[in-house]
Amino acid sequence: MSGHQRSGEKVVRPAVVSSSPSDSHTATSEVDPCQDGKYSWFCVACVFLINMHTFGINGSYGVFLSYYLTSSYFPGATYIEYALVSGLSISQALLISPLVTYTTRLYGTRTTLFIGTFLEALALIGASFSKTIWHLFLSQGLCSGLGMGFLFLGTIGVVPQWFTKRRSLAAGLASAGAGTGGFVYNLGVNAMIHNISLPWAYRILAIIAFTINITCSFFIKDRHRQIGTVQKTFDYRLFKSLDFWALSIWAIFSIIGYVTLSFSLPSYATSIGLSKQQGALVGALLNVAQAFGRPGVGFLSDHVGRVRMTAIASAACGLTCFVIWIFARSYGVLILFALLTGLFVGNNWAATAPVSAEIFGMKYLPSILSTLWLILTPPGTFAELIALGLRETHGDRIYLPTQIFTGALYFGAALSVWLIYARKTRKLW
Image (cartoon, rainbow, N blue to C red):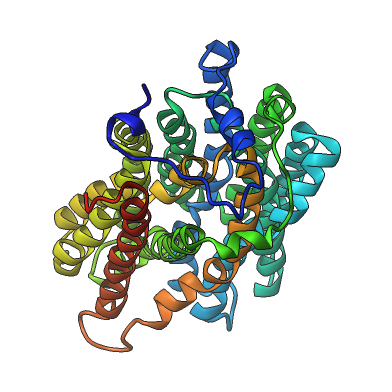
């Protein structure tokens, strides 16, 4: 008996998604002997490494941002332009979801991942030669986002296909690569910038990312044919489902909160008088906490219910923002906030696929994810711009509006996904 069944969560597939409920049930209930086996965990390891060298490397942009904001590397560039670079990298990774779905259907997962590997390496090399801010837009913003999109979107639906019993745990472990990479590369980038140079920091990242991603892409296999997945680039029928609307609101609020925390913490640290090195360490600790938190939340999800645990994780992020971050005026308290919040803040990336499969079924997962990523493109683009725009221009608490905004977002995310749970189980908790 699965974890969600033990917790009392009853999965109901909306009719707008499947005209044949029996097909959806068959696609998710039949047990394949290949599932939950050794290769399944090998696939998790490969996706872990890819996440480490896509979103993990992208997570180090907070260190680059702190360096750019306190130096004149690009004369005349504003904080709005720097914020848009990070926004572009996230939004482009999501915007190309229809294209990734199309290339996967036409050429297969492996070719899709090869394209992403090449684009990400090209982006990092291009960023190393940037002389003006628009060069950074094209390289670390646009091209890097495209590369991340092909790699991330090409793999996020693969891991759930290989598991039945420990699906959320496996997804959490694979997603933990982003947190691990963020920790490693926050510290690594800061050291390379100060001990080598900014351009060579980018070039070293490019070499490492290309080597790891091309190797892992070669070994990953999907199970689209066995499951009979429906790979539509955009499914308008989803908008007839109240559950999909609630899931979309949760995802929108979560991605804005995630981007705000990931990219703002290092600069917040310097705003309260800490050094750049201390700010980089705070950002790194936020990421390393995710490396432990995502699998932990996944493990609990398999036992207490995936939808319910997602609501708990979102509420926990909101609580730490209001109770700790607002009052974090010292190095020690800020580290405590990074460690506690990091346990839950990246759950939106780990939970999206398992929770979507829980609600709608495995057969329609690619179509659901493709549509959902498109919806997340605008908030992903402007999240950091909003966060920096909310800062006060003077005073000793310039980030207070940003802190309140972030906490409120996570409580709103928790409420929206809790509504799904209440509808499915007919219980308040």
